[in-house]
Length: 165
Image (cartoon, rainbow, N blue to C red):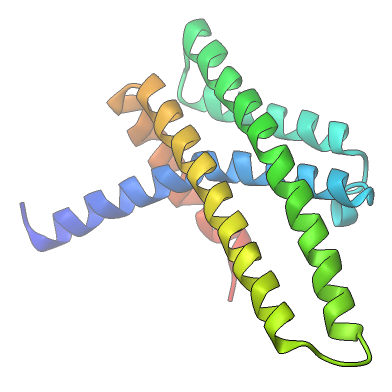
């Protein structure tokens, strides 16, 4: 395989791995908004509305790859499980955020406390990343290689729409 072909194949795999995180990441935003009791911020609506919106996006993705009923059921179960697993992580993250604001607005700045909060936040990010990575692998195993390829092409074609620098 040529260097270019290898690079293209890796790029397609990379975009495939980004597809499901888009859906799961949006679920994370809903959880974060719920943890903050702030609704969905710029998206408007409640966490439940945001989750419903993400479920519609997931349905479109599954339509795009022509998923079978059993694949849809399995991937939706993965979505639900992941959403549930991420809730306590987001609640902890919200508390750390509040603690960081307090630490940075205190009369005296405690650099040791701030560093400890940063370390805790990094650990939560790692924990969430592990949950999402597991969900991605689980969902990828449900799809056929051809479906994963279709998804990767779709993501590659649409990736630039929202990522202008």
